Length: 264
Image (cartoon, rainbow, N blue to C red; front, top):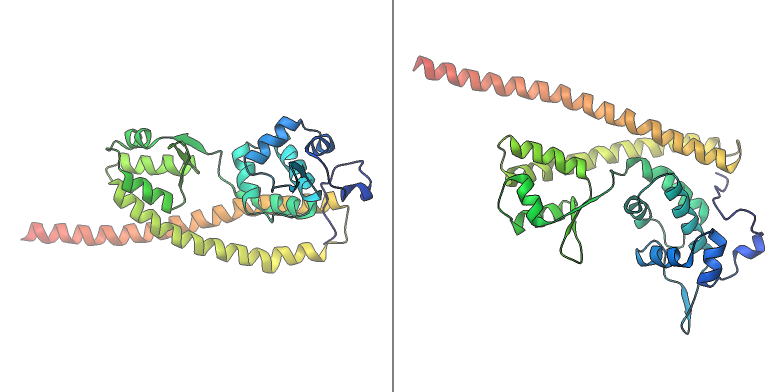
């Protein structure tokens, strides 16, 4: 596939490899120095090369900041941008970051929420329990912050869980069930990713000479955007079918048990 570029427009190629001070970096990407420092503090930039007390930034820093700027312009919250870049290669090029974002962003959950263990317990209608919080952290549903608060990484999943707790299911039982569900969902995700790599990705490579780099990137986004609802719909349909079968079997056993009691 030809290079997919989100590099700073209007910058000569020979200038892209020149190291920049933080002031020059901010000017290159159209940001303030204050914002650049803030994004660096949030871990959105790899550390600069230090010479004495002066930091020097390269092409990979420009690429990351351009991507941050574009995602902010499209309405992505910083928490989602952080998660998009968290697993990106530190020295990734503009092309790699653009592709990374196109493939990952559609699958990320809504913006994370911040709460406390006490607030979480109140919402669940239980007493604060450090052990339950530890389990949520272990499942990757919650992160502990430095100030002691909790960051809920997928608020929609938490809301669904609380609705189940309201039905009378003990939180510990729900967490145990969710642990098993995560294992199965991870296996399902592996199936879909393998399918994409073996078929969809090959199709993209075969069309690599068609169109401009921007059009190629749009093609990647379009494929992933269409794959997401299709995969979710297929998974939900399969789940409904299996739930109906399992519920029918369970009801048969329960009703047979009740009939046995009546005859007794």
